[in-house]
Image (tube, rainbow, N blue to C red; front, side, top):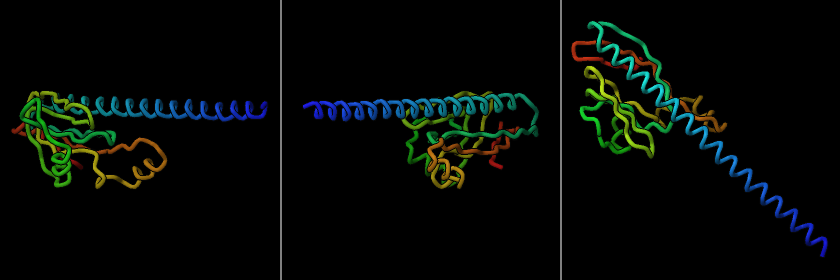
Length: 170
C-alpha cells in the first residue's frame, strides 16, 4: 500500500511540474509576442513621424529609414481613408506583386488586431509592405527553427516630391 502511495505522489508531482512548466512557457511566449508588437508599433510610429516632418520640407529632400517589424504584420500601406478594410489575402497579393499604395493615411494591420491608421500632413506613396513567406531571408528561417522571433527589415528611401512623400525600398 505504501509503494502505491509513493508512486501516486511521484506521478502527481511530475504532472504538476509539467503543468507549471507549460504555463510558464505559454506566458513567456505571450510576453515575447507582446514585446514584438510593441517594438513594431514604435517603429511604425517613428516612420510616420519621419514622413510627417518630411512633408514640411522642400521638394527634393530625402531621408533613409530602417523599418523592421515582426512577422505578425499583415500589411503597412497608405490609404485615402482612415478605416480601410482589406483582407489578409488582398494585402498578401498586393505585397507579392510589389504594388504601390497612395493616400494621406499611413496604416498598419497586425494579425488578429484592428488596423491602425495615422494621418499625415501630405500624401504618401509607399509599396505595400508586410511579413510574407516569400520575403523570408535565410537568417529568419534559422531564427524560426531556434524559436527566436522573426523580424523583417527594409531600408526605405523617403523622398519629398510635389505629390507628397514618395517611399521606395532600397
